[in-house]
Amino acid sequence: MNILDRDKFTSFYKSLKEKDFTQCRSSASLFIPNGRLLTVPEGATPFHSGVMIMCYPENGELNLVFIRRTEDGRAHSGQIAFPGGRFEPDSDKDTVDTAIRESEEEVGSALNRKDVLCHLTPLYIPPSGFLVDPYLMFLDEKPVLKASPDEVAEILHIPFSCFLKNESILQSEFSTITGKVQAPCWVWGDVKIWGATAIIMSELGCLERRRREDLG
Image (cartoon, rainbow, N blue to C red; front, top):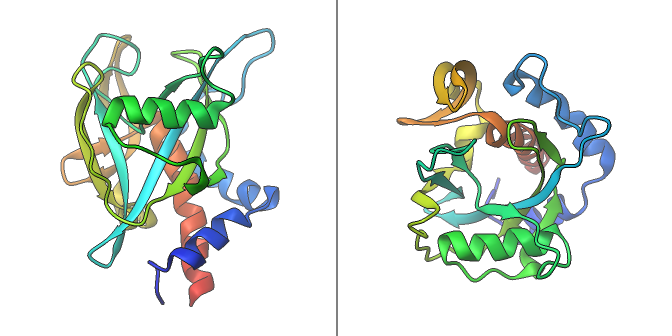
C-alpha cells in the first residue's frame, strides 16, 4: 500500500461525492459540544471564511500543517487551527481565494489553486459567527513556511496518522474567553486540537481511513 502516491491521493479526493461526505460527517459528533449548531441559525448572517489544509509527504508519511494562533484575547486566541481567515469581497472571488490569500499571509507560503483537491463540509462556529469552508490541498514536498508574528505563534507539522486512530482522542479542559470548558480533542505529544479544527479533522480522518482501505 503506497499512501504517498500523489496520483492516487488526488484521484480519491477529487472524485468524492456528496454521499461520501455524508457518511463521514457522523464521525464529527464526538467533538461537537452539547447544543452546538454546525449550521447557520435562521436569521443569522455569518462571516464567510476559508481555511486551507495543506498535506504533503515526508519520510514515508503524509503530514498536515497547523498553526497555533497568537494570544490576542479573541474568541479563538491561542488555539490550534488551519491557516485561513475571513472572506474579503474586494479581493477574493470565493473562499478558495480567501484560504490561499490568508494562508500566504499567515505562514508565508505561495500556494496554487490547482493543488486544491476538495471542499470539505462547511462548518458554522457560533462563538465567532464564522461559516468556515475547509479545503484540502496536496503539495509535492514539505513547504517552506514563516509565521506571521501578529497572527501565528507557532507552525506545526503533524502526521496524518495521528487522526486515524481512536487512541489519539482524549478529554481535556480548555480556557476560553467565556471560561473553562471540557471537550474531547485530538492529542499529538503535548498538542491538543479541539473545537472546529477537531471536527474538520474527524471528517477528513474518516475519509482518509476509507482511502487507505481502498488501497488494500
